[in-house]
Length: 109
Image (cartoon, rainbow, N blue to C red; front, side, top):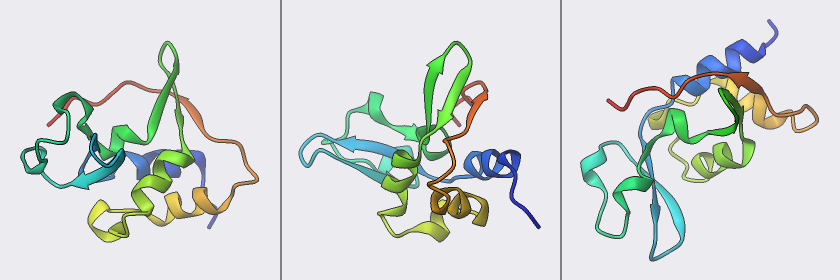
């Protein structure tokens, strides 16, 4: 069965956790509750993982950024993040352009 861009976008929307930027170490870290970040994480940098991987381009068009997905993959918690096979296929297919789609940010939970 082939993987479609719709499958990949749906998998990105299923990512769990929150991403925050640690100002001391200049790295992004993942936690599974907004309340579990320390003082080194600016509150306005905390983003749901399913939104973190998308970057605004113009109006309602966003791009699913491989470099942002890689930040999550580098933390080696794929199961907890709920990485689907479709996202892994997307990361392996570097020969294809990044997906751009018209979408709206999801409300924070």
